[in-house]
Each structure stands twice: as structure tokens, then as C-alpha cells.
Length: 115
Image (cartoon, rainbow, N blue to C red; front, side):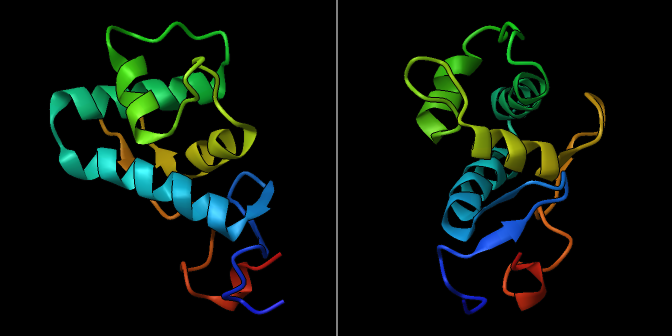
């Protein structure tokens, strides 16, 4: 498979593999929340990371709606396993210093990221 094949598996920072297209979809949603920079988006991103860490985590306030609207949560409030892995690989830091990074060790277009 070529490095640009959208079905190619890429290895995430947490060691899991996922199709490039699914990683890109989750990444766009994560990056969108991070780039908005308003408090609701930052809290939603933090809550998404906490839910990815612990599926029993109770989301704060209206963050479920934000995460559903961005596609990081299904309408029933569950998080897809690939989305969870991308969040765990891309969202770093703690509540006072949250940031996002591309979820693989290689740049988005680098063939080295293909598993």
C-alpha cells in the first residue's frame, strides 16, 4: 500500500494501528476544538481525553453535545475505539497545559507512519 492510501494502517503513539482515513477524521475534530481556543472547546477537549482514558468518566456540563457535534462521540454518548486511540495519542498535557500533536511519530504525509 502507498503512504497516501486512505485505508493504510498507521501506527499511533499509543501503539495501536488505525486506518489513515479514520485517524484524519478524528484529528480534524481534535484540532478544531484546540484551535477554537474558547473555554467550552478547551473543556470539551479535556473531557474527551478523560473519557478516552476512562469510559466511565462522567462528562462535565454540556460537553457531550460539543463532542457529539464534532463527531468525537456517537449520539448515544459512546466513543469509538479508534477515536479513543487517536485522542490518547494526540492530546497531551494536564488540565492547565493541554495541547495537541499529530497522533503518530511521523508527519501526516510521511510514509514512515504506515504500519
